[in-house]
Image (cartoon, rainbow, N blue to C red; front, side):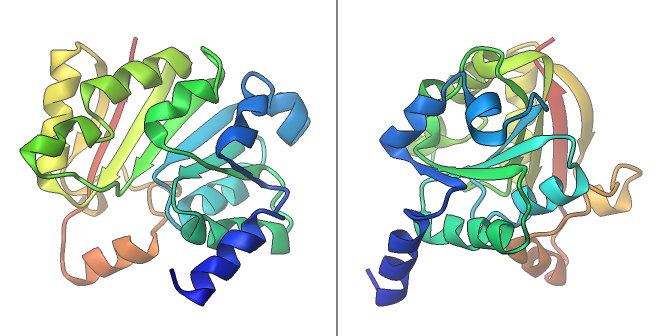
Length: 216
């Protein structure tokens, strides 16, 4: 591991808006009073990377609380540091493996989930690691409030098709499906947030897929 990554790992351990692994367990069922000191809706971004989407959503919606979740601390460092420097207080970051998410949130504690440009895990042998595979959908159903929404933004056409099939398989409620977001009527203020990687995809004329669904 390079010196810069080591420095970032050391630094995030001092950030008040970052919880890592075991220390996050204490927040289960207590995110509102202990982390945010309010009762605003709790929104998660999974595989948040550098946290650009998490922080920008927090800026746009001060009446909600946002938690970016990823396992790579050197990436989380960027979003967490930006939030601290700009005093964006309705955002936090959680460094965990996403498959363990139910250990950190009580049933019905979360109002909404965003999955933005996750690793599509294209190999058949890694299907269970896709963030919209059946085992993850069960996790999301358990922690979401009734009617809670799940959003997927991806440049990967196969992951988009795979998720559509999972929505049908599990008889979920599909609200929006488009395989070309920025040439659709759905590209509103929040969907037009662009991460570093999304900007690269768009420069290469890659279409962006978007799905919104719930467990109603």
